[in-house]
Image (cartoon, rainbow over all chains, first blue to last red; front, side):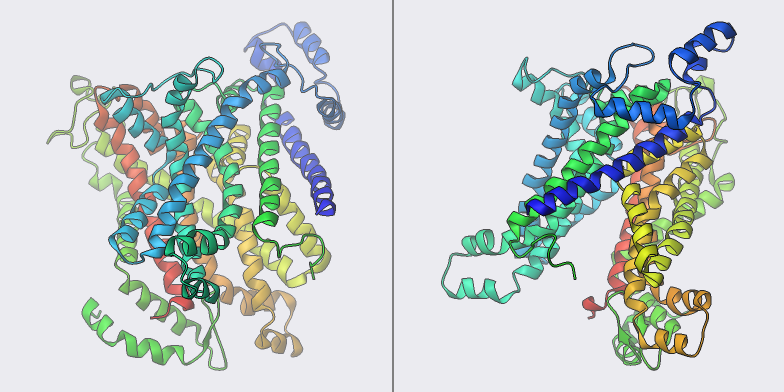
Length: 318
Length: 316
């Protein structure tokens, strides 16, 4: 277990070098460097040259990258080219909102898809099942931003139940914070909930046909115990994998949902950085997204071990 | 052309007959002494026809294709025609889907917008497959160092969340339809490669492949003529579902203003432009969104049906 953890952590290093190297070199090959963006169409060449020297834009790419990576390791993620604020601090300030949104979306996915998937599997080919399958199909097909707009229109503008824009930090008011995040959470979570429901239905259908479930029933255990304690745990194993991969989708999905609901998280930050070509911000944004994604995958591997004790990593690979 | 009824009437018997000619593999291909690939496809299509939802999905997808091809003929107005006197109107007999803030007919824009969605969806999926299939099949066939190298490369590829990668690529290349296609194709490569590798790994162990190798068939020909055709079923299913994903991502990028640029009509961009007026004119914002939803639903239904039709475990 510990060997596996160490191996996994080491494997993350080449991946990160690969990612950052590729993005960094491509970003620098863009036409129009940040000096052009800052100074506009016509500018004094001397000022431009001075700025380029100051920002290290004259060095070879590999040197610039090396410097940048060295700073990253030390926790110095550079300064925004326009606001001059440290990128690391900016990201740290915006990260909690995005993490909260992702966590709430994951929570929403689990509390909806597990019961829906189990009911569909326990009562297959009934109205419950058809209802859940139809909703799941709609959920998979509706783009998150369109669903967001519909929710925004219905619950925000027409019914006036929930606020549609802005954000209140958790530290100020828990209820106001949650009220602001309910609609974004649903918009972000629905598509993945739908996928998860179908997956849980499928794996549950397979598990409840197995002999050990029949044994549990023949012992006279209540149906609820058979389903919840015996079948569900095994049926959830494939769902955990997908759930981990979904964190990646949620990181991506959060970008558009934050923009739609005007939430000041990492996603909005990234879009603004991209629009302004603020390289340190863009790279910081990509780095934090990849970090969150990798960390989620790591967590999934560990949850796996707990759910399925047969899995012993690092030994039986033959 | 036989009617639907006569197909289903004799289908059970023929399916049973045709399936006896070979063993269905887990990936939906037929292998065996009397291998008949065309027969397998016929069986698949017959099964597909029995699924009402799959046919419904295929119908939607076909309809969107037709609308895209014949947009010039169907659309009541040009996509850029402005009617300043009729700005921001709700649905009426004159403008079925209403008009936007420049007095343009929303229906006509939705009709023309299908072109971008279908183009991006289909072309990016094809390009993604053209890159992913060779990578996957080569990794599976040669194994060892080559396999390891390709798969580690793919690991780095998927270390990014998909949407983020598409976003970054289309930003680096600049917002345009072609660049969205490139971005989406690049993002799709790992999935295609992994599925292809998985399938090819099982196919290459077949006796007929080894027999071909024993009689001296060259690697390239072996890959192209013996292995690839038998790997097509999962690739086609994946491709159908990927078109749906690509359509959503294109719309999302355009919605953020980073995809298709005006004046080219795109559902995502129109949704973005019309959402500002959503409080007083909800319909004009909802129609482009509904167009995305219905198209994606069609491809998803068709893809699901195709998967079931190709899955031998679901034999009836």
